[in-house]
Length: 281
Image (cartoon, rainbow, N blue to C red; front, side, top):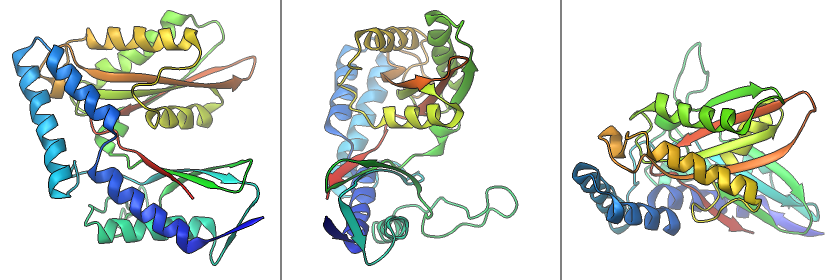
């Protein structure tokens, strides 16, 4: 049994929410740069160049890459041989978010009541926390700050098992088409297939945390990812909605077993600054 002090979890979350908001994953930056080189629409090419310059400036100046520094989403894989001491895991995570958003001068965007009063908590807590118990004596934490310009464009549909491949592909493509310029394209699309109502949405969120350069391990779903991406990029929405070949940078699909009577599909839309950072304690 390995003991981990809750303060270490707090320090890690603090570090991750700050870094994720200021420095994008290298593979995402490379993808934007690549699309800028192959884009044949002059306006789209110029916008992609501006996005690249903004990313570079944020890193150089040590400031957030986007003014919407998101709601903190935390994925944690906790080893079953870990004993957390000094505080509860949830309290440790939220303290890390609180410190990170205050010390990192990140915009606080969370309200305490979703409908009635909508008063800002002034420290971006609480976070949305997803935990799983795994083998071992380590804790892996992924911080994925999620802006709501893109989050608001997300959709979920309870298909029946009679749905065909093209039905699911069309649902994903239509989601992006309906979103238009609202999610600040080029977008990253996370698709969750399977599980139940709520788990398909979690799968879609997890998909956004996967590298944009890594395809699904199953060739069937890898081919679906590419098919969806090609059809989305044929919509001519383009960077920031001004037209072009680059409406999406990537489509990631994650799957899970489901009930014999169901086929849930969730689409989580991420903007061109789909942020995530991870660390193992």
